[in-house]
Amino acid sequence: MAEQSLVVRGLNVAYGESKVLFDIDFDVAPNQIVCCVGRNGAGKTTLLKSIAGFLKPSSGAATAGGVNLIGHRPYDVARMGVKYVPQDKKVFSDLTVRENLELGSYATKDYNWDRVMEYFPKLKILLDRKAGFLSGGERQMLMIGRATLGNPKVMLIDEPTEGLAPSIVTHLKYVFGELSKSAALVIVEQNLPLVCGIAHKVYAMRDGRIVAELPGGAALTPAACEPYL
Image 1: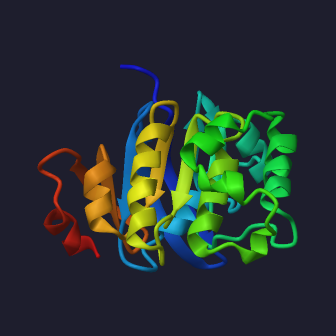
Image 2: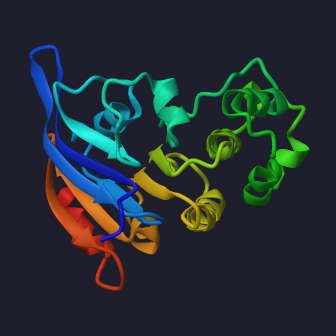
């Protein structure tokens, strides 16, 4: 069996005395799109933040490329090739799109923006606009584009289509397919038609636990996922 891009085993996370993740196990293969679904408060964002280094699990492991990510700072996890795109769509508002990308390039030493512009051509005409004046969809393009710098092996993307226009959702569906040619994707998403259109595998979460693993393909329908929302 080929080495997995991301392996999570026995991950437990608590906020103080309140335990929020319970013995999470999952695998992501190279070039695979894995989606995570569940109601608000199920622990999906906590899971991504724990892998990315923003939260410290009480026990368990998350390994990428054979290296355990747990205990490393977020910027070190990013340098290991695991990038996190948060749900909040926050960018450096006082900086231009160009300057936001330059920060990503400085961190990764990757100054080739050609692929970013191939994914998101609109960013070309927005390079000199302050990021604070971008729409939600444009901010999402910038965040995902910036995260591709450095050619990550794993991308963790939290609620990417929330509040976005259908045309942008359609474009992101295409981009995720392109990204999966060079990286494994873990996407937290509530848009079930999108999930069913891109996922090779779906993990359903409830109350901090993975309660189902659903295979992708023709058998994966919104109706199959709805019981977990």
